[in-house]
Image (cartoon, rainbow, N blue to C red; front, side, top):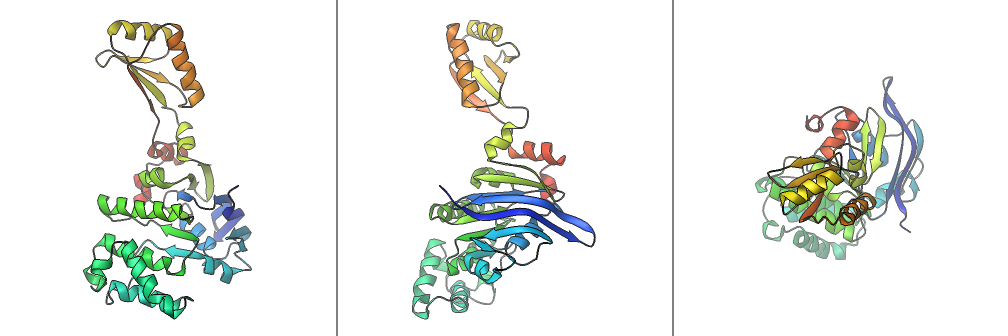
Length: 313
């Protein structure tokens, strides 16, 4: 059974009389990607700051890597890595020198330093640019170097705060690949992002935070099934089959030009099986079918009353 890498219970935080976190509960399983979504001011950054020992909670219990955040902060810090929204790299140094600096500041034996630096440069496809100043790096290269520097300490839990903000689509997908590789190696990733597609692509579980409260938690598919609009699209070979299916599947919407029916449903395997069995009972065959669900943008709007663009502002 998979253990928990991060557990928070009743987490509360107030600033100047304003409640920023109103008793939230989190359970992040080890070796997974957990994504925290929410509009600006929802409490995402405060949550990350508490989990990474940068800010003390007013109430609640938090354990990270099995350690109590309030009483074992040093042990927590030894187990985690944090990559902020902006790359924390020294532009006057080369990529190799940035990594070497992190090795020297870490507890790694000096004899391992050269190997660690070389391995990370190769892993993040920065070997060719290793001796160039970081000031010449592209945004994507800087983000990769920043994450590579975070991995010097070999953390088992990594907090990524909007790691692909400002990157072009190709660099974003490269970063996604790196994150997937980390998780395949058993690393736990706590991700905040302004791109809902990113959470959909990477996260095993998603939590939506709004005004200091968790308004939903679940897998991306579970959250999408909570929003109306899920349907099965059936396409038929002939108009006669379309007519027959429309008579059997009452409440469906037909598209005569495409010879297709749109049938409302929850997208689950049980309801899909029942739908296909019903067609089979009437000797009706569909040429093809597909399940369409709302995306996380629809979920975000339904849960917070705001569009996803609000997150990016």
